[in-house]
Image 1 (cartoon, rainbow, N blue to C red):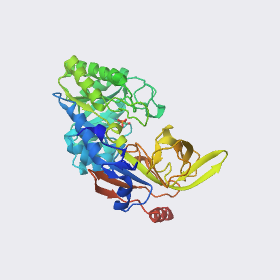
Image 2 (cartoon, rainbow, N blue to C red; image 1 turned 90 degrees about the vertical axis):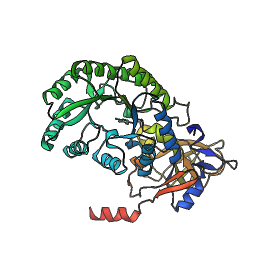
Image 3 (spheres, protein in one colour; image 1 turned 45 degrees about the vertical axis):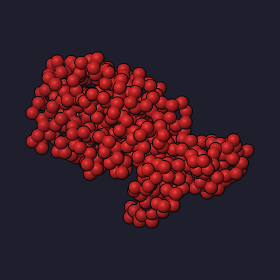
Length: 421
Ligand code: PLP
């Protein structure tokens, strides 16, 4: 199955279709109210399968960055395509284990892991804790000693590679909080070797940031990983893996981005060039799921003021924060019917000026419902109850069938919790 035929499309009647189902039927059959996320889980699994295939004869796997979309239905579908998981908290680790992600395919990143999270990672027997500072290595060693065992660690390098993306999602440069600076790598290995009863280096990792639009910065960082891995293997024996991170961009309506397979094939070629006989790990999040979800909202009212047409919808920045957080632009289109020529400014109900989805073309009249496209990644996972609003519903579709529904929380649940505070 080709992913290019999957995901969002319109039928002959110009109705929005996802997962071979009319989005409006998914809403009514799942008995959910708006705002609601609808996902094409079949397309997500297919994109994971396509990514896995790109490894060819190279040993390794995709460690799906669970932070992008942590719904169990999504994690299970991607895992069934052979993927592991990249987790960044004890909660995500426990969820990945609950979803039966094989522990030898889980890596855990994060700059500020708590003692409890470190102990959970060590005792779960995951492939590696990706350590982000020399100081963290000492903490991991102490937790391993307390547990009477040896922790498997990978050094997450900060390669000091910059590329053009929003500053909030650039992680691999020397002003970012992430990763071990290259000048600290010798000290990190020295500490590991001094604590060989409690620490074992099994991998070298990096992640330069999100929304890459070409493999060049990814490969620049990957070369640094390979240099460090090669030197370490020569000095101290075999490593299990090299992990070049994720961050593969998707199109939000602009020019198309390279497919995941381009990055993975280039990574395989690089390992070959270096003669590194290790597993390759790739950590895509957004590129496996982002294009395969929409947020559906009802239009609550229109407003004509200041020479402008406003569309007030029932989804807000609490449901999808990317526009407010990163200045991200998502296409907002009618649920039924094609976009028109008349510009409307689309805003949500939250009491913040940044609750603004931008200007989008509709017809002369306001539609009854809209879809916010490409909302499968960093959507629900970042949702909040700000302004006393309930977390939205989620509907999971595959091959024209609803396979799971997560109902919206009731506003009463919010009232109960705040009434106790
Ligand atoms: N790996 C790590 C360590 C990350 O921090 C992130 C995202 O920030 C990812 C992978 C996934 O990035 P993306 O969803 O852009 O592929």
